[in-house]
Length: 86
Image (cartoon, rainbow, N blue to C red; front, side, top):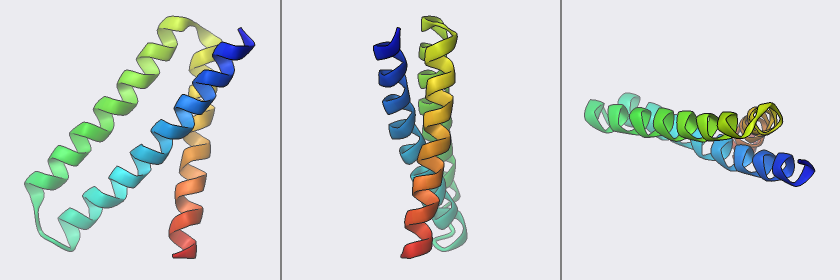
């Protein structure tokens, strides 16, 4: 169970990094490039990836789901830290 939790945490960090990177890319596409279709596609991809990962972890149990959710929060923190330093 511990290994499953750690694997879910790592998955959550990766999904969180990708989720918030795609959020930035979609926002830039909409505001800077005026490409609404690209922004919509990135949003759909972002939600699909995040929902798929969380549903998959939920099917494995509460511990993997909570670990993945924590990982997404850590991914958010890392993405924001990287954006502030740039």
